[in-house]
Length: 264
Length: 263
Ligand SMILES: [Fe+2]
Ligand SMILES: [Fe+2]
Image (tube, rainbow over all chains, first blue to last red; front, side, top):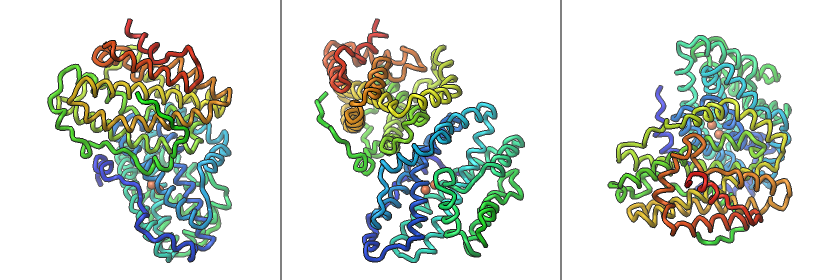
């Protein structure tokens, strides 16, 4: 699977919703559990810039083709946040710049020290650290893509389904980039494989765990991935991961659900 | 440079209407046959404009990353910068490609290695201790970088008619970036700590692109664009605007930065 970065950059657009009749939410609103999930996903999307920061202090940044992707990817994710914020605003839920700022400030030292940690790690571990970033990104994009697809299925609301499918289509392209990068960098590199496996099996948490409370994470995971149909999506992610070089047998996403007591 | 009275800046509106200067959106045919000095200027501009992610890194490791209004701006700014850099690159490619991009000076080699390994860490620790007001320093530096480059484009447009269409397309983008920095600075400068950070950043400001490549990188700009006494008014105008913005009379950041390699 090759990934054409020039083409990705050329075709990258902000997700649009102007053509969708979202005003219908004013009379036919989404149920509270979906709004709670949307709010969580909105925060995760807006938080991408902090994840970008962590990448920029490691060596992945030095590679020019990666730069083009990062610029467009960062903007696409920002617009996912804007789209979800718009849906929430139609339900009287405001996501303002001030509020986002307050959340990031509240993260405090943990978040402030993140660049330091990343920087130290990447200096210690060197080039192989990029492979870790790429596989980490792949897992997160797979999760995002599955989350939007599940949301489209769970919420029969016609306006929302179209919007989240558009977002999911962009997430699928992000998956392609990260998975391609991860595969290339892990292939024939035992050290990078060991490092990536260690990082995923010990440090990986569901996307958003750093920014939302445990209760919120459990709600969203249960809402989207509880039950047989949800677990099928999660198993698919674990299968994708285990097919990457050196990741055989890993089931980190399923394990995370089990740890939270979310039944299949 | 026209005086602009922006007090508020609508970041939401800005993110919705980026100025997209990708090669397909520009008529680059007028730039098919440029002379050496003009190409040297465009080469310099490309070198500076395409380093956007370096700048983003330096800003995001500081408490500024929590400023969601600033990061929303940066997302769109990065997009605009990316396509501008691609277009400049395309012009250079049509003339045999940009000059060797790896032409760091001896000092620059050391600085770049430092910037990529140690500086983000130390910078992150130091500014996190200094607190939220460091953002004013970033904004002042952003304003100056942008004003200096806008000055280059403006001079280039008036000196080289073939470049006028390009510079006319770029200048509104730069003006909008300046409006953002201006509005943000005005909002924050009442805070003494913010004012201090902004003034300090302005007085230690260096001409963009000199960190790694040394003063040689800016020679085309100085010789081709700013050597003419006619340029002096433009330089003074930028300094005056900055003085008004930061409320410091004796500060002549741009003239001083130029002075470092004019002599
Ligand atoms: Fe997204
Ligand atoms: Fe994504």
